[in-house]
Amino acid sequence: MKLREYQKSKSAIRLVLEAMVLLVLVARLLRRDFFPVFLCVLTLALFNIPRIVDKKLNLKLPSVLEAIVLIFIFCAEILGEIGSFYTVLPWWDTLLHTVNGFLMAAIGFAMIDLLNDSPRFHFNLSPIFVAFVAFCFSMTVGVVWEFFEFGMDQMVKTDMQKDRVIESVSSVKLNPSGLNDPIRLEEITETVISYGEGETYTVEGGLLDVGIIDTMKDLIVNCIGAILFSIVGFFYLHGRNKSRLAEQLIPRFEAKNE
Image (cartoon, rainbow, N blue to C red; front, top):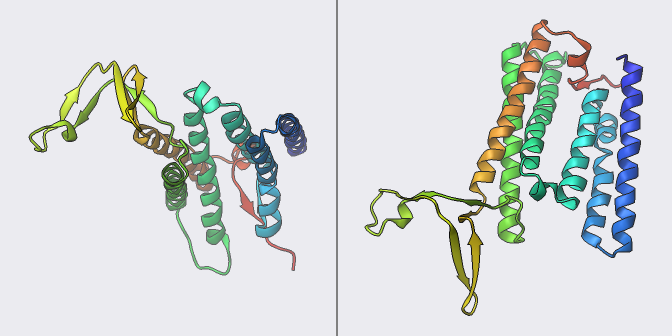
């Protein structure tokens, strides 16, 4: 596919996504459901990130990568939050965190590659080092995001970490002797939670895990996405992969006109 065709496809994707967001916004506004309206406005604002980084930072996102960013934002905010895909489809969150790891590695790669190519700096970094820094940048962003999810769950009482029901547990907290020997419970069928003034809530099917599995799963798939892009970036710099597809995944800084 030629560059002009990539650009036309990207523009079409942007228009379709913006139209769908506006339809959701109007529908929720008529129902006076204001939090989804806020998410729609936020999504439309986030759609302008490629334009902002282009104008302010001179960072050019290739058409394919920009289309991935737009689809990612739509899938996270509109389908994930408003459409409840995070709870309806158990693999949805996993998919998005994998893509996020890929995208953040691309941004990290672009920043370090800028320093590598800039005449103002005397760097001559090897492809493996640039790929490693891109990986580290992506993982750092992933960790900071998990900090944010944890903070929101603790302070605002959301459930961004997405609790889940598990059927077994191994914990030293269950050992009545107080020793560091875990007690393992298998085939848990239900958990009864007592709260308030004598009220109870029964969790059917097992024990309620409060976010740790989701957090670790998110970091693992973020790592996978970061590794995938780091491999693409390494071979791109190493000269073994100069295909148009690789070029459409590599952000580039362009020198400003003096």
